[in-house]
Image 1 (cartoon, rainbow, N blue to C red):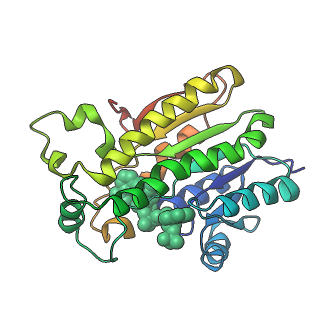
Image 2 (tube, rainbow, N blue to C red):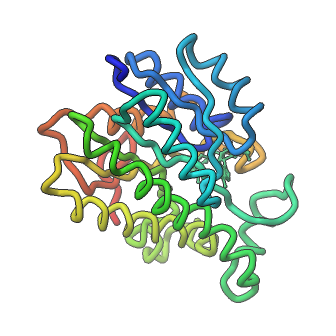
Image 3 (cartoon, rainbow, N blue to C red):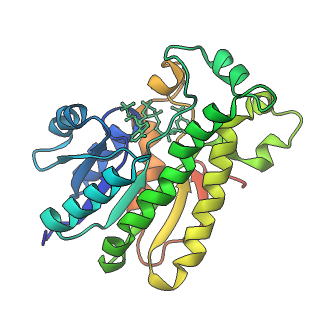
Length: 249
Ligand code: NAP
């Protein structure tokens, strides 16, 4: 078994997940770079740390999830931190502008196929990966789960009629609301175990997710998820926060 703590970040081959992986490695974790394309993961792992490893992991594929969990047990013998970062905004053609994505994700027009694809990754994928990794997390001295949510999923922010972004509340943002509910459900379920489950809003960040139209950097975006991954025994569970503090549900 590894002496150093082990962290798995899903969708860590690029974007915010890659930066979270780098920051956790800098904090002494053996980082497992989850990537649905193994080659992309291997390339990314080289930029994370000498002892980082790529793990093939498609969060929508049960066989891939089970194989990843088996490999982590066999090769590393432990898992201390799981960051559920993999996410998509739409299932259509890449390169669409933000307004186009928001338009096609409106509940009045979105196809159920598209909705299911987005929720399969952002919601059911998180449940499936967390369930598969729980046996290892339960054995860890300080198991931590961090779900990468979005301020766009905050119901409290979206019910405010002065919020200019509420017109974008649709397929993607509602999936993040569901992710928030799932974060709470896991947190309550695991309260007696010492495993802490929290959701982080990374902020509007320039990545491929939004054709690099975000205003923040991946370094800024990784800060809150990494803080939650490093919570001590006295840290909270079942919270939703960004770098400025708690985000209303
Ligand atoms: P990104 O650069 O597009 O990265 C998304 C990552 O998720 C990629 O590694 C992608 O892999 C992976 N992924 C997608 N579907 C997957 C699947 N089925 N299985 C495994 N991996 C999968 O986007 P990002 O901005 O870094 O997003 C990271 C997280 O932050 C997401 O959950 C997103 O919703 C959240 N977020 C982002 C922003 C923002 O402004 N950027 C704001 C709020 C929340 P491939 O390379 O194979 O596609």
